[in-house]
Image 1: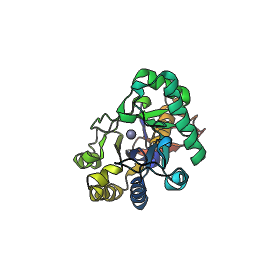
Image 2: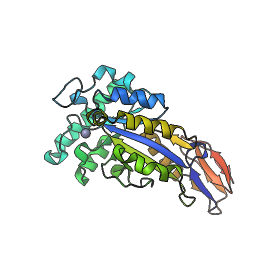
Image 3: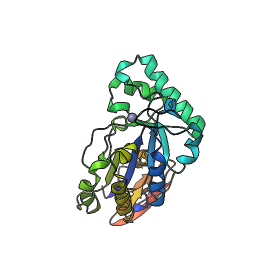
Image 4: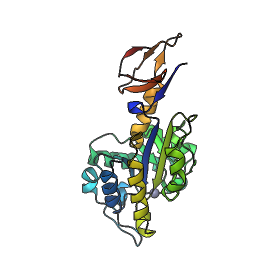
Length: 267
Ligand SMILES: [Zn+2]
């Protein structure tokens, strides 16, 4: 096999951010991402919109579409419950109603989620899939840059408090590491609570200064990996067929080639 798939544009590195709960601090974080041309996914609890508690104020329903424009909106359970405390019927309602309400606000299919309180188990995963959710992020830091193999148990690289310990290894990737995904997660209210806005801004500034990184939302990463893994080749491996709706980049004998959607490509 002389070819290997690459990220779009022939790149070998990708970065994605994943933020939970939809509190008012998301406004400042989205602004930061936009300033540095980064992409994030925001996992929201529709049932909390417009409410507040002693710790957090939540965003308003009518700002969802404009606030997160250019980023991805994703589910996090309607009321942010402990799913281990729910019946199967309640799990279904929590996910379906969150998805439905978000879609009515954003006007596109909402396809991802992150697990409230980091809880996940097979029954919950089964319900999420029935509802039409295609991936879900855990809070189990891998501290590596490996690509996900099970999108319903998508383990991130690390929480944002550990990003600087991973940065050098990521940007100076050794030659043996073919593709690297740096997946960062957290809550925007943590920057306010822990007074770490300067830290995340410094990270955004540094990571955005590299031109060999693809910045994408969680679902963009998922869609691309599915398209790349679904390339079809003949037995001689000199013809590749891309049955997906996305172009896929490959490296072949030191050259980057782009296999367009629906294309039969002769190597
Ligand atoms: Zn949460």
